[in-house]
Amino acid sequence: MPAIFTPSDHFRELSRTEIFPDTSRPLEVDLGCGDGTFITGMAAHHPERDFLGVERMLGRVVKTSRKIEQQQLHNARIMRLESAYTVGWLLPTASVSRLHLLCPDPWPKKGHAPRRLVNQAEFLDGLFRILVDGGEFLLKTDDQPYFEDALASFSAREHQFTRLDWPADAFFYPTTDFEQDWLNMGRTIHRARWRRIGR
Ligand SMILES: C[S@@+](CC[C@H](N)C(=O)[O-])C[C@H]1O[C@@H](n2cnc3c(N)ncnc32)[C@H](O)[C@@H]1O
Image (cartoon, rainbow, N blue to C red; front, side, top):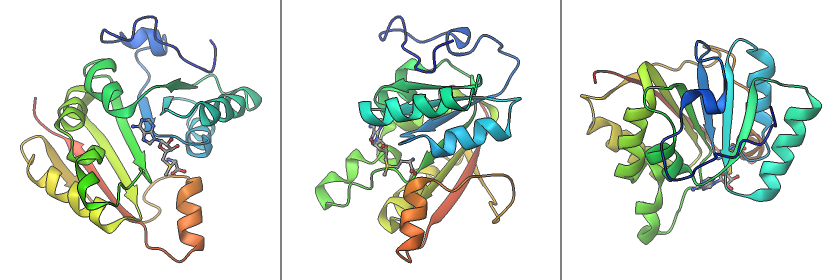
């Protein structure tokens, strides 16, 4: 199974078995996975789960795929595609146990706020569609306005998502490359976790 996953058809919903063959295993998705430190750390720690990274920059896709191959991780793959489209249209319905969005591009200019994933109906509708019942969305950002937008978006969808506590060290969760950079610069990392409820 190649580390880089290329859908055979970009214009229809994938089936779960195209990504990983064993559908009994939980599938986790890392959106905008960068150089793959988080996804490979998770895959090594959780051999009983499968991990798909999504990243639009070719150089980062290649770096991540090399890490997957060097560490011989058979439970991690990387796909080069755009996040909102992937969540909105491509990933299979009711297939994802946890979706991680870690240090997303903050789009800090005022007029660019609609570009934040958490402000896009395509993304939020898709998130509800692809998560399994009880599945989780986990967000970390150093950007206060982005975090506030996320809180507002999920508050408006209380019938679909409920916020969970996320105490430090609640479970294994590697620090990402960007998070480490922000921490080194003394920035605060905001984090929040929601569970999908209802259908
Ligand atoms: C700030 S970096 C964070 C990388 C990694 N999650 C981390 O925390 O170290 C954001 C990453 O998301 C990717 N990205 C941004 N927008 C994207 C989109 N719409 N679709 C796919 N990848 C995207 C960027 O190329 C970049 O690698």
